[in-house]
Amino acid sequence: MKKKYWILSLIGAFALLLNPSAFTNSGGAPGGSSGSPASNGNTCARSGCHSGGPAQSNENVTITTDIPTAGFEENTNYSITVNANDGGRNLNTIAFQASVESASGHEGTVAVSNASTTRKIGNYITHTFSGKNASGGQNSWSFDWNSGTAPDQTTVYTAVNFANGNGGTSGDVIVSQSLALTKSQGIGLEAVARQKVALYPNPAIDQLTVATQGTSQEPLKIYNLTGQKVLEAGPGNKVDPHHWQINIEGLAAGTYLLKTAEGQTIQFQKK
Image (tube, rainbow, N blue to C red; front, top):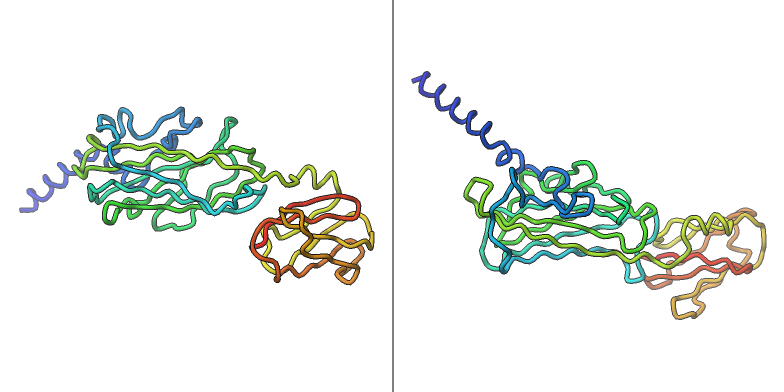
């Protein structure tokens, strides 16, 4: 009896050696499979991965973010979500990989926000073993992205595997999708350094700190994007010669412009 179990175990191990991708890819696609420029356009629909599948039919993939309409700011954290719907096939396994890139390569930094469903492989985000489990033919994954100094039209790339559940690597539908991101036209980091004024945190919730190189007592003014002044901070808001603290709790969520008496302007977000 022991010999029989030993033989069965040996057969199982041999099967994994013959088809390692079927085992390893269940816990995440190999890096360079998001269909992006850095992936050379590759997805898992290639030899040695999940090749030979049918073309996309009713399967649908969308990408959403919490980036404001005005665009993303530099060195700011955002959430990106990939949504997958099999179009009524009611599949049990749907997996993915994503990256954020410009024509120059990967931009900013991607990070795991839910370790039970996603993991990081190099500059790519992919599914975990449990993260491939679909419900009602749908699955979704969210991850964090810090924009760094990413340029305008930096793009989110993703490739989703709608697996047919045959236990192998053939017959699966791979769908690619991308979303170009608009960068805010506010003042960037280099311009801030040049103007000798900065503010933080950005986005802000209720309190805004403004740092200036000069010691002017002239008020700071805050405008909405239609040009209407919504707040003014006078000398009473200064906590020392170079720092102002402004209560913005009364402002509605949105994008605003802070202007100094010298005409320097910084855009910020109120959450």
